[in-house]
Amino acid sequence: IFKNICYTLCLCLLMSAVHAQIKEQGIIPQPYQIQKNGAAFRFSPTETIGIGEGISPDNLTFFNQYFHQLAGYSLSFKKTTAPSIQLNIDSSKITEPEGYHLAVTSKRISIIGHDQAGVFYGLQSLVQLLHQSNGRVTVQGCTIEDRPRFAYRGMHLDVCRHFFKVDAIKKWIDMLALYKINTFHWHLTDDQGWRIEIKKYPLLQSISAYRDETIIGHKKDSPHRFDGKRYGGYYTQDEVKAVVAYAAQRHISIIPEIEMPGHALAALAAYPELGCTGGPYKTATYWGIFDDVYCAGNEQTFTFLQNVLDEVLPLFPSKYIHIGGDECPKTKWKTCPKCQRRIKDEHLKDEHELQSYFIGRMEKYLNSKGRQIIGWDEILEGGLAPGATVMSWTGEEGGIAAAKLHHNAIMTPEKYVYLDYYQSLYPSEPLAGGGYTPLSKVYNYEPITKELSGDEAKYIKGVQANAWSEYLASTAQAEHQIFPRILALAEIGWTAKQNKSYPNFLKRLRYEQPLLKQLNINAADTFDEITD
Ligand code: TNX
Image (cartoon, rainbow, N blue to C red):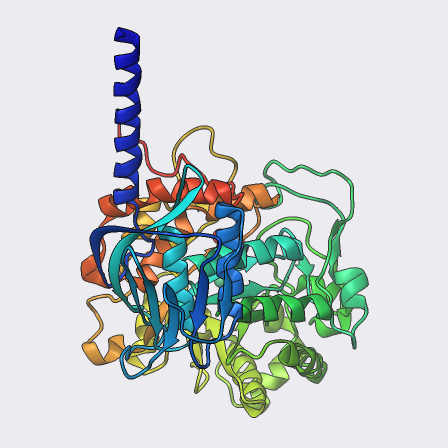
């Protein structure tokens, strides 16, 4: 009897723990307003979702993907009104772009979005509220009113230092969508590899996409791992198109980055006539900054880049094209007769103004094709191109300066939001980039600094976390660096400032971790500083 009582007691305790878990479960990023009502909606396989006027079934396909994993069955939907689950668009009721209203009672789930994206984000919140227990899928009762703080919520991924296959990219795009991130910045060209097929320049595929060794280590002299094999790869244009379409279904815009005038060694290895000295050059086999860059005095450079962009633009419908602009040493330009002639002919003061000339010229070209440019904050040097958006990485100063000049800016300061940096001080952390950006530091980053007036602050369009891949030698390692810190970034981008709280975020993260596991994400669990 005693044994039985103990058993029952344990069971009761367990049940209440499960119940508590359901109650505590939350959403990342934290919604604008959320009120729980203690009810629970129970799904059954016969349920049909009614989708209102103008809602794309794509929104639901994505939801069903998660739902199926959890429940073992999918929900069917029809273009009508349904008694229990209903999705609608109503921009007069929900006034903010990407905003939505979600209401769950024991009898009914309703999502109203301002637009398609709003409905989609309502469904993402629903995914995070779903709970499975004893084979039953339930969602806790609540009323949510939600909308983003910033229009631009991004993640960058460098696929040059290490290459990631299309399947991995798609998997991560799914994750970004789940956390309401709407921009994927795809860093496609760099010294260590050129990763996008350009049909007019086949040597970019046969030479620039590969390097001699696989390397792990920093700079030339630090510990290397040479395995003697050719390393590399690239995405075909068909693959790129497929990824862009996949992302668009998930309300993510992909911004391609074609680096110029620096970080160009891989391209120069194939087309040495584009460098100041004429080469020969080799695709870089270690990390860092290299003196050999595109020659700014050579017309062929501009022809090459314009031809490249002519093939890139049709693949990416994004408003923005990233042209790099960072870390471009001026050493070769200083002694290059063609560059010096250009400085003279264009009445430029120095090599910094030559960089500005370079970017300005490329901006004009892209504008003529209906696109806007984004560049790293070094594009401020020597004068900012007229319509450029600044991506502020060296600090926040670049973004502040841009906003004061009434240029759009995106904050991505390395000190706070670099995902290649260490996230904990545990000795078990794998080799990472030189900085330290633990979860709390990412979370507490505030993109609107006090130097900006209310009017100037409007030019800060949002935030982005950057995953440089020098040390991301595998998809598992990439996931370890990206998750869970990208969830903190998502909350900076989406959640109203007054609703942010790190302790509360950590609580919600605890309930998010099983979902990350279930989705096969190798998230770090030693993600914060040792506090003793
Ligand atoms: C700086 S951030 C770079 C990258 C490196 C990164 C390493 C930026 C615009 N340039 O080329 O990969 O540091 O953290």
